[in-house]
Image 1 (spheres, rainbow, N blue to C red):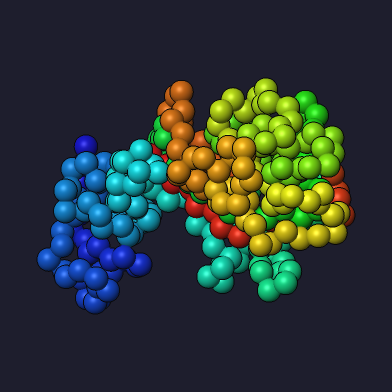
Image 2 (cartoon, rainbow, N blue to C red; image 1 turned 60 degrees about the vertical axis):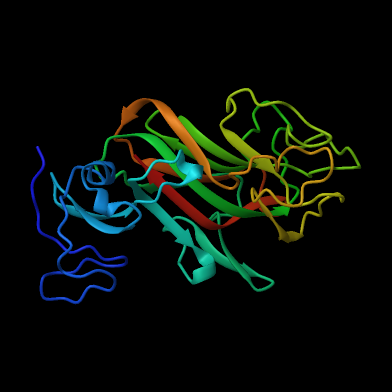
Length: 284
């Protein structure tokens, strides 16, 4: 059952009756609900008014994206659970390290050792079946997903639950074109493809930060961001999805699991690494 709560909607903060709202006047009275989607469905005035809203049972405030975005299935009413943008000065989530190279700051694994390094983002006690989000990364060294049958997630892995259930992966391949044919460890969508995915299905993006060169172990490839759908060579289909870098996934069953994001590499950082400077996640 919904509870009528008199509150003030603001784009970047919650305001009480005595505070001045940044965008709208105090006459804006909204129904609170169990989720951003419920508020969206029952209150047309909230459409296209993204900002902080109250959720009930228990009472807490969340950021709701109320836009109808093509990249998220043309549906409004998304609850934001992750927002990291290092380009605007954000800090990295606890568990990842913030570093800079050639004037560009990013998050990376906290260790130089191979492995996966997780961050857990709370579902805010919301039952959800749909997940939408984006990330942007960079390639360091000779990252080489799809080289072996056990190496599909050199990159960013997004999962939920225990044991982990795959939502989406942002995979980093060795090179977009790889003229040297080194191990043929390219993305499956590259013009000189490597292995096809066995466990990820079609729920992943794959791209490299190098196009026409053999990557160097010590190099940071910061001029060609990963998963942005730009700078793919002729014959490479990795950039074809118009929604890049956004993904949209409907799960088989609803869940309240927190969402885990892992930076993964199967070799030490002196050989390869994935660097991330933007991450957004929404559930519904």
